[in-house]
Image 1: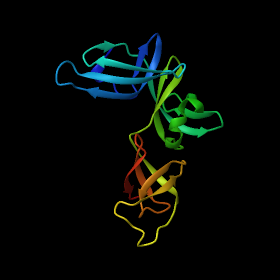
Image 2: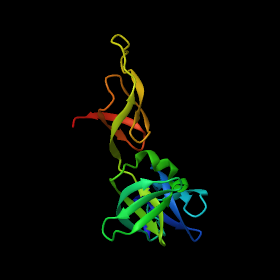
Image 3: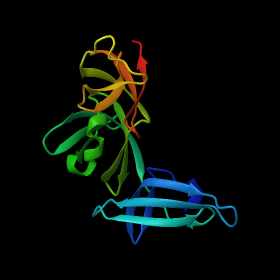
Length: 187
């Protein structure tokens, strides 16, 4: 059991006999009454979306899941392939189930896989990831406007808006929840 106030993005809750992955959560604390958590969940089995309002003190049933640290190996047409760092077991994750994660997966990097009843239900992406700028347009001095940005493409194909001074080959830190540039990384 998990209290409504302890639910976070990525938590797994059991509703209607099936696991739901929390994709959004918002806390609301009205002036009067109890604080509540508004939770948007996606069914792991059929992809349906369920929205609930849970008082922060109320307990709900959480799905018992295993977390394994695995190394991302490669992707083929249908699957992402991971290797468990402890047991060396191979995990295939259907690409269609995790399409929103494809731009954040980097060969050789470690990720936490959430496994429920033998099936990978989520790939935990770090909050911030360092990327190399693969494609970037140059700008001409004088083109600058205060806070001007340009689109770049990273080595994984992710498109991010960055300040004009960022050049191809440089490393940048990106917030993975918002797809926003955070800072240039000196290597």
